[in-house]
Length: 386
View 1: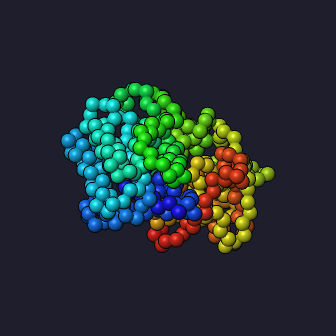
View 2: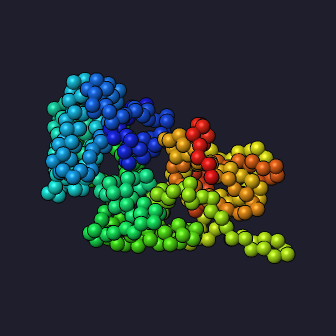
View 3: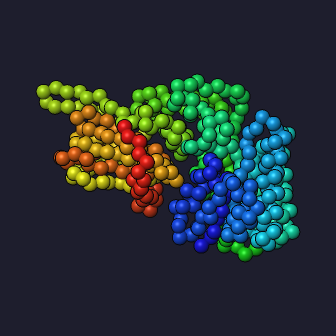
């Protein structure tokens, strides 16, 4: 069992990495970290003492005073080094630097010099160190106006605002899930090798595009999906990742359940449930009263539940949080709820008759790579209802 601690655990990349490590409970033991540990020497020393691996993500990305930003980031590195040397421990440290290392600004300089300080620590203590030079990271749940321009664009497009392009440059981008997989690969590699490693690791990017090109893709998602409920054409994995990122900024409580148009005549009723530009798999289920299906989540799949007969409650809970969202659907007024990534979800028949539900998912089920992880939705009484 490899004991892994993440400084900056509550942050954007930290949250995703903590959750990704949680998919391998027999391999990794996650050592909890709180930002307040940097205000307590005893807590920070206790933290480093428990870790075989430390992923140092804690950093300030933006501040009006560039000097404060620089001093803060160098200070965090120095505190971490002091704690490890005081405890005489040598965990494998992975440091998240940035491609901005080469730029003449205080943020880039803080990352470059922070990496140098940790390299020197590893050299004099015979420890292993991986200095990751990371491209621009994007993904669901990042902070708008802080973590990524993509986070800002997605938030504005889903909240009635208009994004602005400040500089239309070509940007190298990596999806946060792929960055986490890269980090986990580095941890495994070092754990299987007894030789000390001190390395500068240039993390490969997924793709590069101009800012205006990415905005155009996101605007298409808004027009088709957000405004009309149509699943857009997604040409490759990068567009799937952009789409899942976009969906992560939707205010689910105000959007779902989304009603469908009924076409009725003497023969009965006709309803279009999924309009899509990609393939996938359509299925349906019947559920007897009182029974719950699901209680699992996905990290990449796009999925839609449409109730076509009976009464149902759909629950969503973001992994790592306690708040449960409840949505009530009735087949007499056909409607659907889409399942965002990293939200565990279920559906319960709350009526007196059989529940008929149609499911669409964007990929066929592969038992060797199911992307389905079980976790209960309703492990709390903190509910929001709609």
